[in-house]
Amino acid sequence: MGDDQLYGGAGHDELHGGGDNDTLVGNDGDDDLAGDDGADTLSGGPSTVELAQTL
Image 1 (cartoon, rainbow, N blue to C red):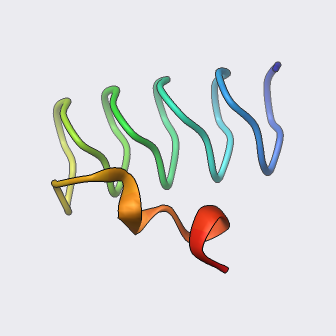
Image 2 (cartoon, helix red, strand yellow; image 1 turned 180 degrees about the horizontal axis):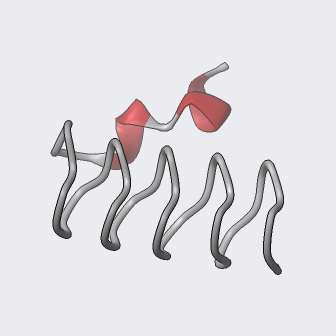
């Protein structure tokens, strides 16, 4: 957990994370590119869009 990490759970500004703000691939939260719920998301739905989990 923490800021500016590539693969983590909760925290800000991480590339692959769970629920938080400003994540590129996340479950929920605001300003994430792919997420379940939250504002300003490009792709919605389940967390299967998480690249870190599927690769």
